[in-house]
Amino acid sequence: MIAYGNANPLETGNDDFERFALEECIRRQRVDHRTSVLITPAGRGELAIKFASVGADVLLSDALPVRRNIGDFILAGGWRDKIRFAECAFPAVPEQIPGEPFDIVVTRRGLCNLRYEQARRIVRQMLLKLRIGGKLFVSILGLHSELGDGYGDHDQRVEARYARLSPAMANKYGITEPLCLYSERNLFMLLVEAGASVLRTMTSTYGNVKGIAVRV
Image: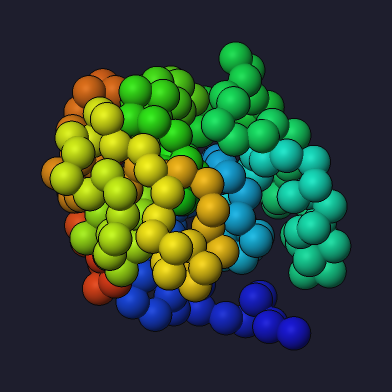
């Protein structure tokens, strides 16, 4: 088992997205001594533990089966006092979430399961869960990644883009549902249209796109 309490939480390999989010958390902890983080969907729980290990109060939002899957993992690490769970299946965003407004909201991959217009509404709702000056970190599957090879809507405008991966990619990654894949510019415009002030966007080595925005 990984000893998260002794690990350097910034050691995230080539994932600058996680590093930037953790650095933002550390900066806020030094000033306010209390930073609140919302992660939706919850993922496997590793990122929540990294935030908790630098002192943040973390809320994971996802469906109940996810809680059952990762709950023992979080309890075994002794993080029950720092990591809580709100039952809410993404992309639903409740009107009130325990602990809001948050300093940091993180969402990874979930937006690509939605059509662009719905994704824009969800981003706007997530921005409203932030304090003024709070930051939103978004990571999404990229149009120019390997997943884009043979993707049916590759040449469609992002507003109309929503298709299944090629059979080869769907079989390789176990993704059978339609997706809206994004270019870096597409993500930038999604954030702007949702009302965010975009601080930066980036494309990973493997072609996925990431953005950091602030609520103003």
